[in-house]
Amino acid sequence: MDFFTPVGLPSGLPPLVQADNLLLMGSCFATNMGNLLVDAKFHPDINPFGVLYNPLSISAALREVVAGKVYKEEDLFFFRECWHSPMHHGDFSSPLMEETLQRINARLLAAHECIHQLDCLMLTFGTSWVYEQKITGHVVANCHKQPESVFIRRRLSVQEIVSDYISLFSGLIARNPKLKVILTVSPIRHIRDGMHANQLSKATLLLAIDQLQASFPEHVSYFPAYELLLDELRDYRFYADDMVHPSPQAVRYVWEKFVQTCFSEDALEIMQESENINKALSHKPFHPESEEYKRFLGQIVLKIDRLNQKYPYLDFQNEKEICHIRLKQ
Image (cartoon, rainbow, N blue to C red; front, side, top):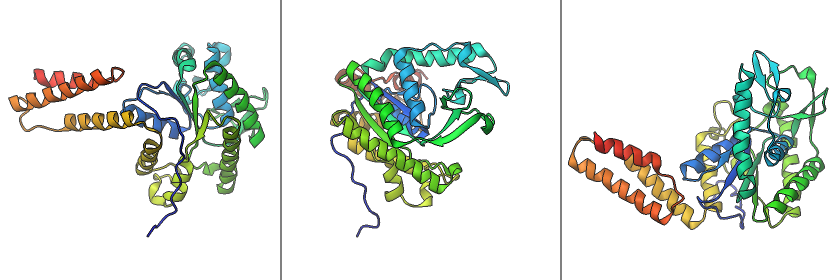
């Protein structure tokens, strides 16, 4: 007997391997998935602009990455004792203008150097509500707690999103024909807009993604993170204390579905072996100075070396350093 309606997982998503070049951008759900990919021995570039919520800011950020934009003083503004970029999360802000620019430009340069070698671009849309600067008409990625009076708040239309991304994806795919794009909608609820407005927002994103899939059937896929939380985990126990963000358990559940859908056999093997190595390193010995424990550490190093021989692109430097430090004790 089933006690929930299962969400059908899509077929045909690109099979990911740890050697792939990945870029993840979007809401904090993208950051959660990115961090889990790091744990699985991938090397993704995660949110080079910080967390972004609306599709237009994500596309604008991608265009700046492609162009190799270099931020200057005129791209920033000073508010509440810090320098901010309207395109960046507050993590980049600083009381010193030079420090803000250094943080922004270092991340932009790293993303720019890899953008046309990407194997997979993963974008997570959070909301279709945007804030437009009244003076410039530009959609900002972050208001940085400025007064609402300086913005016009509105909801993007489906066609507005689709037109923007058809232009963006056409250019990216022309430069990189192998590129695969995975789109998701964040299950995080934007309750500040009200529940009905949040649903309208998510529906707008879903309709836009459906049209983009139809426009780029060989390149664009959709992973149903939003549906997994709302339909398979439809219970408040799967939300954090704020009743807005998914709980760690829910994030893990969606992650397992993602692994099931998107990981190649090699990627699954590497992830399992990596987990086994980390479990072994987390083991607390009764006698860390004993020869038995040193042999145990030596076996871990041997296992890492064998994995590196089979998959030279894997990075186990941190794990090997832990073993060598313990062997010297």
